[in-house]
Length: 130
Image (tube, rainbow, N blue to C red; front, side, top):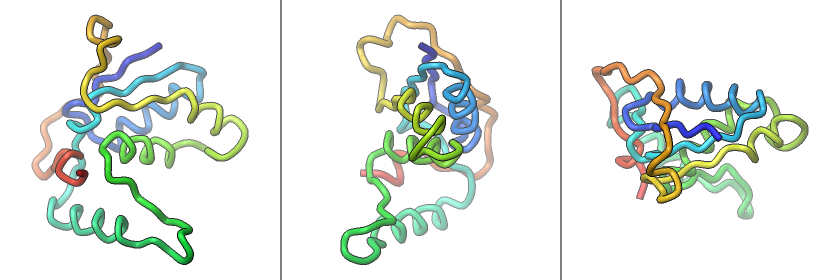
């Protein structure tokens, strides 16, 4: 199992790396999901998240956007997979686990860091979630 530390990583870049590894057959755990950053204008991003969260569609059908940070990250990863509903995309999606913070079973494990360059405009995922 590969454990990826998400603190300071850009959401889109992390999602592509995780999706590729899962398609190759790796079991992946992403920790510190609340510390992953989203680049861009903070006010515009927050407005877009709120708009999508309120939008429910008709008769309880989608699109529905989650309010927790680990589900926001998992949804971004899902968007990078080929077809998450069937075939190899579904199998790969089942291999991915996302956690808020560091669970006890991963405290002593070796962590993999994804590119953590400093960005000018960014916000952490926890600022958009509850």
